[in-house]
Length: 280
Image (cartoon, rainbow, N blue to C red):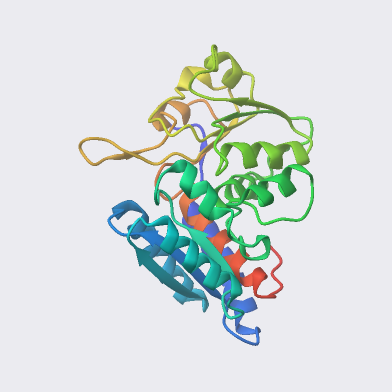
């Protein structure tokens, strides 16, 4: 029998999107998001289609530039969107042309249009405690914790994952909220011990089921940012959901958990970049 509260991301995302829709309706012109996408990346393409549908639902235009994985052409498109006053946000869907190249391309996005916090500058601003757009998945993790009244001040928080997309920004956000933060990864020598002492556990390791039930402190709040496909097509998270749900007080499922909130907050960022005022 499940003891944890299983988070419903769809309901929270719907609430956020309703606020975005209302704010956009008051805007002088509809906000626009430019997406640069590599042709042949099916996963990124599927997410982009979902994002475009969600944008249409709240009055935000999503313009997709589907390109061959050519860094020169991608840089040209990003530069053009950067100079276009009708484009308010830009994201580079990854993977595009390889990790190092993708990082360089993303750094071509102006901070004011970096609505998914992809640039080195935005990450630096976050850690410096300055206003900046935050990667949407990281923002979603904190938003979910807040929505359930999880106390962060003084809490022991463990982040499993160190990517600039989730792990590092989540850690920065938790530090800013006065949590005591440990950053781990799949090469941490005693990952289980680091997880067991956490009141708040955010997992973004990119490895299916890396956190099991015996690695979770009873009553902990567990945010699973993982999304992994098994050979049979089953989607699982980075935590062993059924096991963890017996121990935690709050847990997010791999489907319908963090993902919908991530999309909703990304759209909120686009609206804010366009000058809309949204109170979330």
